[in-house]
Length: 224
Image 1 (tube, rainbow, N blue to C red):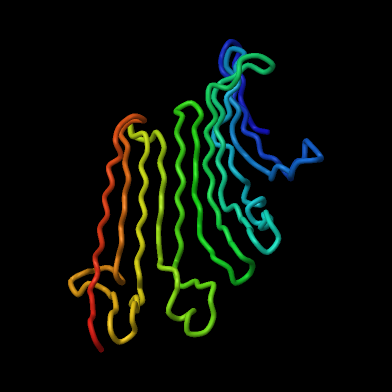
Image 2 (image 1 turned 60 degrees about the horizontal axis):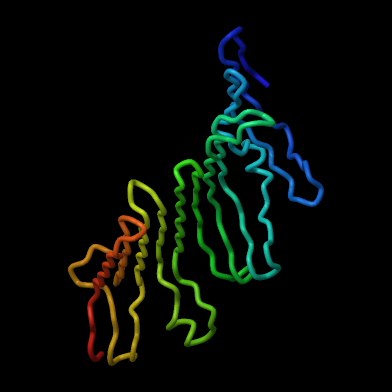
């Protein structure tokens, strides 16, 4: 603990947990975190509570479902608005976190995740990124059907927009609809790594009509 206190003023405490803490035996432990507590006229505020460097080093993947879903957290940030212990509820809670997810075991589908929510603003975000090249099949089918590199995001009540969805995919390998006859490949004038597909959906307000935009940039090869 490191802090300052002034009579009739604001007290500020910088806290660093030396080890993880399990306040409820039936629930997972809370990893070691560090942040700032501000006490002002009977209220408490929590700012920038993050995982300590040692917690990040020790943090292991946790299995949600055996051989199905595994998650690794790489960063976590928590902010709690002003509240009175035993009295007034917090004036909003904001959490942001990121990590990696593996679906289907060791050779499964892998992606990175980032998300956040803010109860005061009523907002939330989620972003998913995948490097591509994964297939659940083997042999010739596995070579023909691989996931593209893609990025997807969702924003709810962010920057004055009720809902915003974005999905982008890049096919770095030709899509062989009929090998040697019909193939979709990179557009000859594109700077992208392959054929690209982008789709967005926006709703300005809850009751507004959705605006959808889809763009495909690719080349088409007929014959060998």
